[in-house]
Amino acid sequence: MGKRIKKLKKIRIHHEGTDTLIFGLMFIVAIGIILWRSFESHLPFYCFISVFGIIYLIILNFFQCPKRIFDEKDETEGIVVAPADGRIVVVQEVEEDKYFHEKRIMVSIFMSLFNVHANWFPVDGKVKLVHHKNGAYHKAWLPKASEENEMADIIITTADGQDILCRQIAGAMARRIVTYAKEGEDCFIDEHLGFIKFGSRVDLYLPLNTEINVKLHQKTTGNQTIIGRLSSVS
Image 1 (cartoon, rainbow, N blue to C red):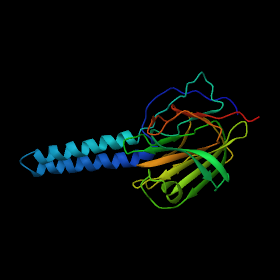
Image 2: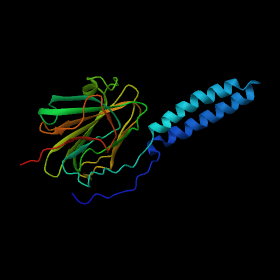
Image 3: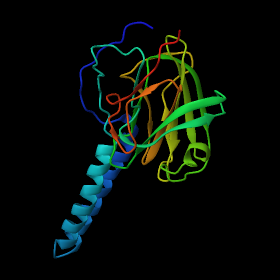
Image 4: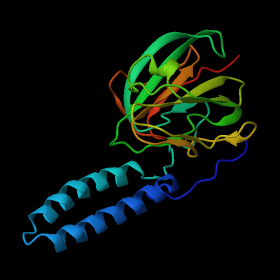
């Protein structure tokens, strides 16, 4: 699959949030100036700045774009890493009848408003399929969200021929799923798969013989937490 290129760790703001952050800051400054000049008491100004300043910092955290390097002795073969920051809400065996038509282990990560919402490729491999589906906007932690919500499916084939499904799912607040994965392209752990704006979820469908390393309610860090290890194909 070629060599993985190492990059320095650093935190930056994701380009998906540039417009939101610029216009949000302009709004806060404009209203702040109006309140400062319109009232003899500056209490309304301080209340507004306190409330919207906190909201702005939350959104700023949401749009972080961390560059993370997975470091496990530089060995990624068979490793499945968390595609997102968040919390494990599902670890169970399910019937996947859309693509694989067989039982798979489903691992779901719920991302709250307070999590970074960049998504990473969970495995090294080649992108086999990218499919976007319009749908509803149920709360992302509900089971029916995996079937009925707006979503983007990405199937990745590993070097030994195993197919992994990674599903980006919109939540009650999410209204935009961005997917950078392109069919036919090589992909690697450490690279961004996409981005989901506001509360949402990412599901992984793994082979039944995958060794799962996470538990229900466990917190995950994208591109750092090891979800599991794929068994070698004989």
